[in-house]
Length: 297
Image (cartoon, rainbow, N blue to C red; front, side, top):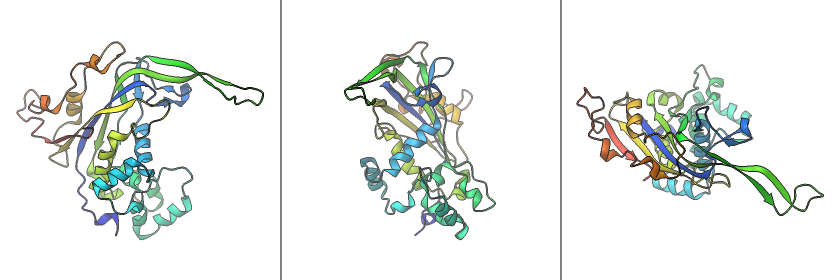
């Protein structure tokens, strides 16, 4: 059975993740010794690569609780169709062999992230150039400037041979508190080229609330998806502007660093905005544009 036997009915989706960060580093900057990413205006930043990496890690950990739970919920039977292309030590000769067989179908059947996010490997198998996939994450930006806290860590056992203890100056670099908005989009236009299916998209949507709770580490111990707002458009070509939907669900911005989630007041909800017209001169409401779901609930 190949992945193409699933109904290829990828919808158009606009989404917005709202992440709360407490004493954690949501995305380190390698150019600043892994300090939390920060823009010149003082606001924090999360790269799209970071979000997709966490999703890939959740799928690749086939013995993990998150994968086994979501796999059961979505009734995924064949795990071989949910391999991860972007991995260390990947078998490039084996991948090239898959590209040469049956119009690259074995390649498309195998790699979930290749079907969903796009890839450049398919260029090697034929004339098609598939750099962009179906799902895209935008740059996440905090809704207020962030304060970064630096701490020195010590260890009882030293790293150097002549030391009986160790010290790592300013090794702990975290955001004291922050609320980040991360936009994402599903556009079905290239699904027929990458082999992406609705089941691939459903898997991503069921995983987004676990991107940090399911991949926690020492410096990322308190990061949580508060909301994962999604609108499945009535039309696969789009029923409302992505910008309009994102603006409606973006919490208020602050001029100073926040200390608590409550600093942002009541966060936007579907109940509050669903009956609003999408434009002042338009009678069409958000509810009339598609189906809403919060995948963090």
